Image (cartoon, rainbow, N blue to C red; front, side, top):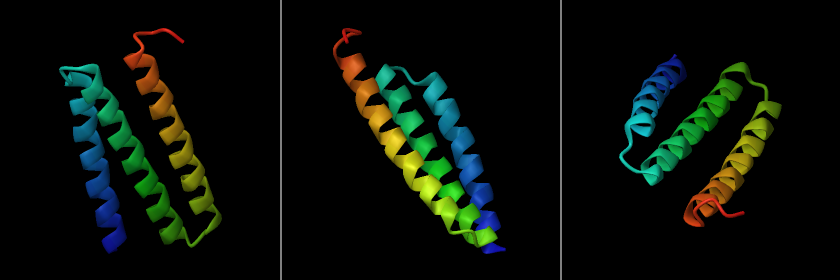
Length: 85
């Protein structure tokens, strides 16, 4: 039961983070907001795996984290170089 409450809190924090990433004054604030949303989704995936007792879902969370990290690196590099690839 405790895990379901934690999942609900993570969803609420994800919504607040979404608002922050939409209203962020700079592009870096928006990028940080997207990174936070990605980490919250990863935590929700892991908690779901714990609830359903399906360990292979944790592998999916690990792949999601790696893809999110690589995406953030390339997006920040793209922004830093002002759109030059």
